[in-house]
Length: 217
Image 1 (spheres, one colour):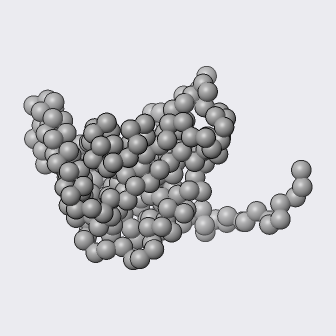
Image 2 (cartoon, helix red, strand yellow):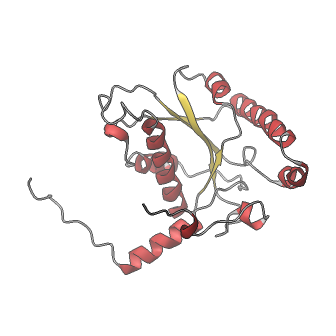
Image 3 (cartoon, one colour):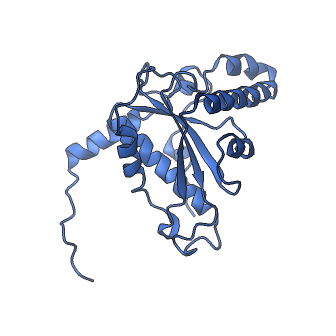
């Protein structure tokens, strides 16, 4: 193996400290300002997202920017239907709190981005996914997380909307029927940045320590 052309960068203590700050301040944003993103910024962020790891170097993610007002209205209507069903499924002790939650920034966010996967991409020649085909979706999630962090560096917030039916979204966005929705993202400047998740602030749930989820065998 030949030596790399460039030396590995030194990620020093100051960088590590700032990286932790980035992770702490990365939030699932639901409250956005309506200011548009600067021209070219989304494309630059997506370039960084494409540096995410993917199974077999397949890059199965497919990004769909949703600008058409009619399609956006249809997505909001789909969210409202699904959210009403989710509210109806809540127990009496949770229903009132659930109804008070703001679970999407679909009206305010200046940018909507749907992330799909191609479930059988030619790229990668199937490497690494014969036994775990779900790694294609995991790869797209890695790209979304990379996008999330890259956006936060620019002062941009991202909200992941999951209260949607994937099979409906393919038709609404006129994408190939075989594509699978991984996430519908709202992107824009947050109205109220915070380093504590909103669901924790309103007492829906709290973050648990590592000791609760780390097991040894």
